[in-house]
Amino acid sequence: MVVITNELESIMERLLSRKRINHVRSVVEFSRKLGEMYGADSNKLELAAISHDLFRDVPPRKLLKMAQAYGLKISELERTHPVLLHGKVAAEFLKRRFNVEDEEVLNAVAYHTSGHVSFKTVGKILFIADSLEFTRDFPGVDELRRIAFRNLEEGFFQVLKNKIFYAVGKNYLLIPETVELWNSILMGRGGLVDEEVE
Image 1 (cartoon, rainbow, N blue to C red):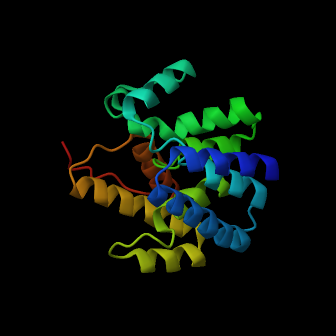
Image 2: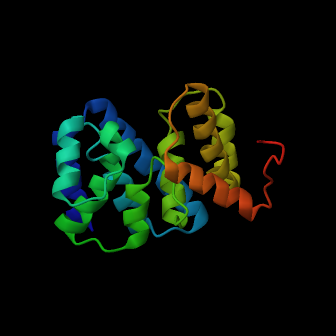
Image 3: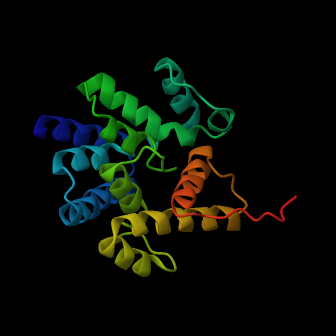
């Protein structure tokens, strides 16, 4: 694990901007704190956290070529916005370069931006940490942090909700996995559909 982490650190130094490296290190730290609270496997969590943005600063055209070379299924949305592929490319890289086969880690990395219905503890913690790590500063971040350190499931839900509100407020497209996750959580909570919607 130490060898993998050291190599990932080296790759990160070559590929990422200083600001992005600071973000990744802060995600690792934030993930570690949440992991201690919620009994997550620290090795899995560190591996997911340090690798999640490994290809985030790669130019879009190159990212698309990498995804194609890896044989990843690319949606129309991802083809139009290749930055959305950075998590999936990182997960595939972990699988091929380091023989990582743990689905919890791979799914956490692949879907850390959108969230995913398959997430277990590591995925939920990474999703939260990516949004709430200590260099993040936006209205409501402190309250979201308090919730996350009080209740993992509620923190996960509130971070997802905040992401959706932000995207809708900016007229951004919603990633299909995000919508699927939102609906899945609400169905589990007995969520309702507005029956007056035509």
